[in-house]
Amino acid sequence: MTLAETATYLAGRDDFILSSHEGPDADGLGAEFALGTALSSLGKKVRIVNAERYSDCYAFIDSTGIIENLMEAKLDDKTIMRSTVVLVDTNDVMYTGDVADRIVSKAAEILVIDHHEMKGEENGRICSMPGLSSTCEIIYRIISEMGYDIREKVASALFAGIVYDSGSFAYSKTGVGTFEVALDLVRRGANPSKIHGALYESSAISVLLLRKDVLSTLELHAGNCIAIQTMTRDVVRNTGSNYQDSEGLINVPLQAADVEVSVFFKEDDEGTLRCSLRGKGNVNVAQIAQNFGGGGHKSAAGFKSPYPLETIKAKVLLLVESALADR
Image (cartoon, rainbow, N blue to C red; front, side, top):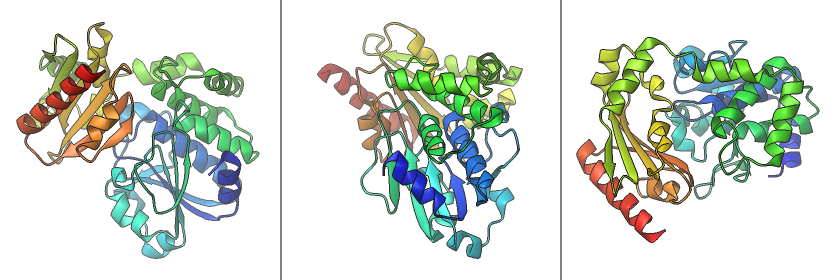
């Protein structure tokens, strides 16, 4: 669907449930908040419900407190069955966690809005723009198409998402259009300095301790081209932090010139092993994640695994080494 088609589609519906991937980040949250606020201003009934609560560091994005988790929402089937579910910042329904079974499977209609490459066919309508920096950039264009007058709170949420997913305007999908959108958002009230501080300079000491312990697990392979870090539930518990506090740790090894791919294995609160991959563009990490049922885009991807850490680590390392050799 084009931006115009998506805007028309949204304008023609009255009941919405918005959601994003598990462990929602600034891009997913900013997209939900902005779209939800815009739709509500048009008289639509909107609920924003994610599988789990967002990290405290993102509370500034949800400035009016409209984003819920499944435990808080208590949605009944009647409400779900009359609603259009809009999934943002995810290219696979299953990435939404329990939202997939408890909401998406019962919804009247499904719309996916994302900037990642789609994984096969989705049962619903799709607005996919993998050439753009972020889902927030897409949402900006959609709600502008709808004639919504963006004000400070929405501008700040969208700006935060764009900054986060574009690597502070450094990643390859940052284009002229990205800067034009950011400029307009600043004109509409987004404060770059405050948003940067909220995203990157507001961590608790427990987060610093978590980073120290995670970095101590660093392994280097393939002539320092591959970096691997590991985070267990015990480390999270012992530092007084939480799973969401690991956000951004995968990027630390990429600060080294030699490191081409960063791999981060982490246990979530339930003990499920997750793997995140980041690269500098020489290796398509999404293709590696797809071997394990995951996905993403060329420079950022991930997956969940039922296998023991050492087993999956060896398999991932072999695939990354092979990809580096073939570049």
